[in-house]
Image 1 (cartoon, each protein chain N blue to C red):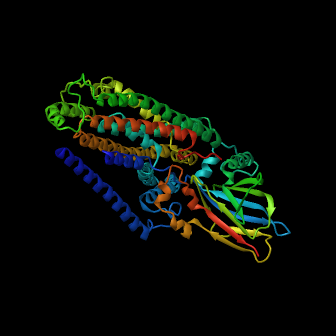
Image 2 (cartoon, rainbow over the protein chains, first blue to last red):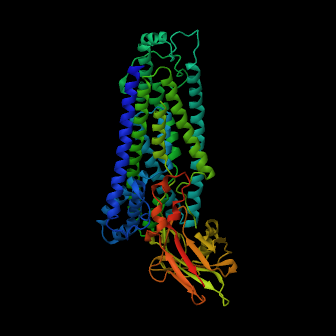
Image 3 (tube, chains in turn orange, red):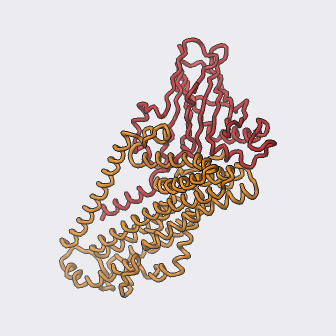
Amino acid sequence: MKPHRSPLGRGLLACAAVLLALGLADAAIHHVFAQNPFGAPKQAPAAEPGASGLIGWLLAKQSEFYRQMSSTIRAAKSDGSAVWTLLFISFAYGIFHAAGPGHGKAVIASYLVANRETLRRGIALSFASALMQSLVAILIVGISAWILNATARTMCKAEGAIEIASYGLIALFGLRLVWVKGRTFIRALQATQPVPAMAGVPHDHHDDGHHHHDAHDDHHHNDHHGHDHGHAHHHHGHDHVHDEHCGHTHGPTPSELAGPGGWRRGFAAILTVGIRPCSGAILVLVFALAQGLFWAGIAATFLMGLGTAITVATIAVVAVSAKDIAGRLSASRAGGGALFMRGIEFAAAALVLLFGAGLLLGYVAAERTTCF
Amino acid sequence: MRALGWLLAVALTLVAGAASAHPHVWITASSELLYAEDGSITGVRHAWTFDDMFSAYAVQGLEAKKKGAYTREELGPLAQTNVESLKEYAYFTFAKADGKKERFGEPVDYYLDYKDSVLTLHFTLPLKTPLKPKQLMLEVFDRSFFIDFQMAKENPVKLVGAPTGCQMKLDRPSDGSATAQKLNEQTFTDGPNANFGMMFANKITVDCP
């Protein structure tokens, strides 16, 4: 077991280092900004009191950018160059807004982990869902306020209805993922049971004989994990024999994942996350409309979406990489490795379902639209 | 292996995190505590001025005889809607008399006015039962922090007809008061329902002899 343990240990050490670095960065940022809260403490008193650390800083930052938007839109009425400021503020707001905790990223990240998605698709999904979010906000305001001249009350109710629908969609989406991943997980569980009739089923036992057996099976193992990897990175292009015992038999093949069918499934994720517009974007759009600068509001909304997409894509990259690392580390273990990965996927699927149900039932408080 | 699972759990928690929002609506509030002749508190009269963005949003689609100027009558239906919907949020006003929670009845005398392109909502919240406590504590805040309440810079709280000797103290959230400082990042990340709006509460305390 010695050679197995060391890469695992090294990996864990690396992970610990990353976590430590994050913690230090957080403390450092807090320290720096505690001295002089953003230069203008009167401008952003909202999230300032007691809000310490990285999250407090993010909250304060986005608050600050958001508050600047209305004055910038007003300024843009007389001074065209203020539009550039507005675009920059919107973009920055998008980045910070998405960096704060929220369910959209959680759903995307969990989906990516559950579905063995590639980095490239993770990024594409993040951008597509952010773009859709922007479009939904523009459509809501464009149709209801601009064309129908509906009241804020009506708009807010529509927003609330969409919110509930989106939570329902997340729950449904999670349910589907749990169903698919649960079956795969159970199959992986069964595959690790020692079945005498199946020679060469990778399993980890304590007698020395198995070590010998393991060594012989090494080639198989690599193949199997190469396969796992192949899901994540197509460019590896491993030519492999499908292992009947790894629990992939009825799971999606790499071509299914990357092919057009995969995009159809990806679309479900985009729809689930993207259908719910950001309340902030709606307020900005209505305000811009009232100022006679609807186009500036639209531009600002797209820039907000772009900023959001960049942050969500970063989180998606972290999630996919973390899973890849976990996959590589667990590859040093025998059959348990595959089981472990299927377990993670199942857990991620369950997380999506829990989010949906929690949001729907009000256990998970999201940025809820308050109509009054 | 367990450590790895733990690592992934941490990663996912970071991603999911606590529910969070930043305020979308800013209210500058001033409040009057109303006293009856016998020295008991009968209710609170609020005047809440919304920020310009929300004001523009709220008057969207409303008809006005003169463009950009809304009369109290024209805003009547909106004021009605406002106070009706505020009920769900307990009017964002929480009273405690000598440590005991007190309830408010339906708001009265409510109206909106529109000046310098911002809306101000006026309404009076009568206490269900008038009280004569030694200490009254009144908090104004939104626990979900969708709305950021700030007490006005000038005359934030007025005691109307209070017995002589009553002392009023206002704790603003930005004061960095003892409780606010005790709350740290833990408050944001503790559980999915972290009520971090709490730390943004405006606390009015009135001590009477």
